[in-house]
Image 1 (cartoon, one colour):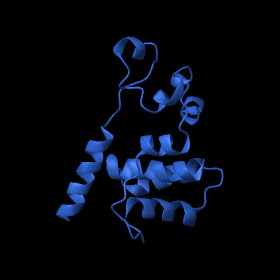
Image 2 (tube, helix red, strand yellow):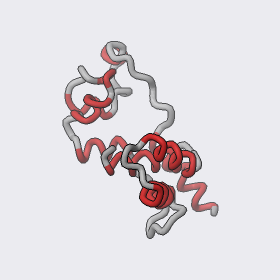
Image 3 (cartoon, one colour):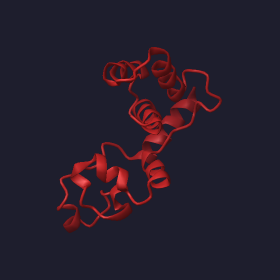
Image 4 (cartoon, one colour):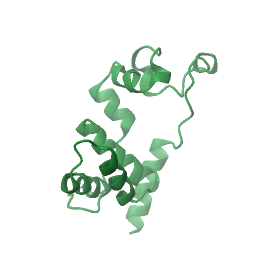
Length: 128
C-alpha cells in the first residue's frame, strides 16, 4: 500500500469517522505484507494526532489528495472498478454527477460529507 494511502486512511477513519486509531492499526498490521509494529502503530498515532505531531489538527482530504497527485483520476479508476469507465477527474467525486449519468455507475453515496466531518472534528478538538 502506497504511503499516501497509509496516511489518508488513518486520517479519514480517526478524524472523520471517529474510529479509534488502535482498531485501524491492528487491521493494517494483520493485512500488510510489510507490516511492522513500530512503523504501523506510530504512523496511526501520528495521523490520529495522539503521537508526536506538531499539527495534530491536520485532517487529510482524500478527494483533494487524489486531485493533487492523480488529477486525471487514473488511480481511482484502477482501484475502484465501479468507476473504471468514468472518464477524467470526475472519478474523484462521482456523487455530484447528474442522476441520469450517475445511474450508469454502481457506486454508493458518500457515507459522510468530508467538509462536515472536518468541521465536526475541529469543533470537538477546540472544545478540548
